[in-house]
Image (cartoon, rainbow, N blue to C red; front, side, top):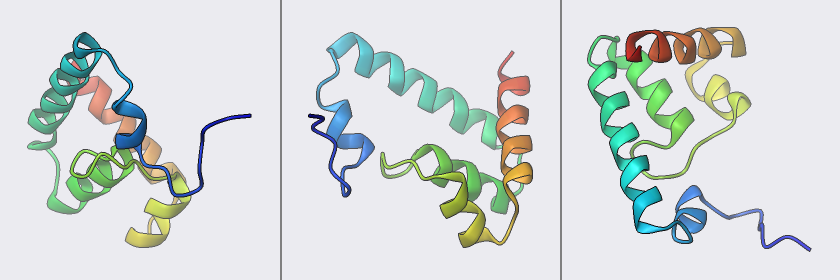
Length: 87
């Protein structure tokens, strides 16, 4: 049986990462935050919530789309833009 609980957060799982994995994740987080400066404030909030960049707790497409009143396609487009800038 899985250790997953309904109220688990990303932070709960990150505690089990090795120091190298934690460092790598922090580097990715910082890179994404730098890229986000090219986005509108609303789009920044959407991506931060989606990936849990502020609180370590990522959210589903449904949760993010309901909070910001946008559709899943819009969020996916933002995600794609992030990785386009990253390259």
